[in-house]
Image (tube, rainbow, N blue to C red):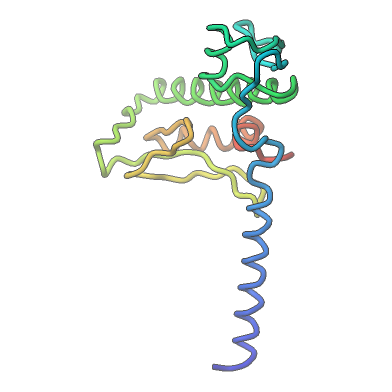
Length: 172
């Protein structure tokens, strides 16, 4: 094989590996590793039923244990607010997706239908854009919305970029 072609392949491979390292470093950025499990008497922050970030001291009460079970225990107020805002963004996207589906008369996602198209929104970090992707045989482990309508998914891509970025942890 020609040396220039081999060099070009090496350069592409090095660039690709550098991109993989960059993505690995950005995964979980700003997110503490593992859940926060307070100890007796330790302050923790959570989102109350009104959507407010508040704090209390862990005493292993039913409320404390419920917050922990729901993933609603945080080291800082900022972490609690970020959690709330991500959940709000998810709900805005899901509500809008269902609203557009109803207006379009779209068939509901049915995972037992292997050939039914199922679309979701993802983020392309290289191009810094939301894009449409599809999956017929797998469900995301993340509680993210799928639709059978390409038109609905494209509307979400085009009109809800800030919420998509917030959910996926994409920095502006």
